Image (cartoon, rainbow, N blue to C red; front, side, top):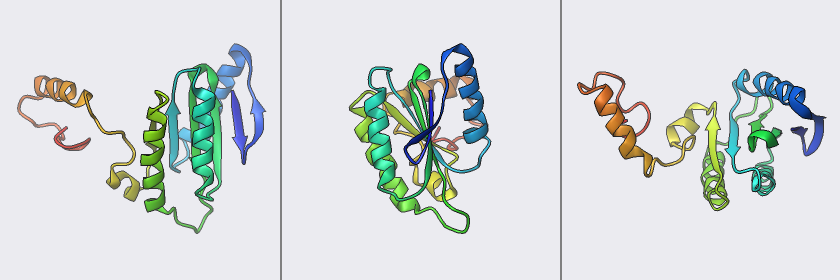
Length: 159
């Protein structure tokens, strides 16, 4: 597992104890921080290519980032670290997420945007299109909520 800042490793975790330390690091560095971050998952064999594509795409934004790679989980997390007083160029990140999602799909990987800013969330960029899963989700929703009383439309479309 590797945690990197500006492309240079800042920590390496190995073995079972290392996996637990890295998970704790992720919790501290990513999930408790309110900044947006990209979360890509893939198969272990395509992880190096996914990491390369994510790092290359993010580098084009010129925004500082923090990267955490978890080979055991085949995931890459990239936190957007916009300096205080500066605003995130939402339009540029929306386009980046959509383009990167398409590129990673060719590798069998997926990408979501966590902790999106309001503008990023309203764009629909945080989540990939529903495609085949939408019909199943609607069926489950209709069985669990036949009267439609629970927050319809909060996720996407009528879901």
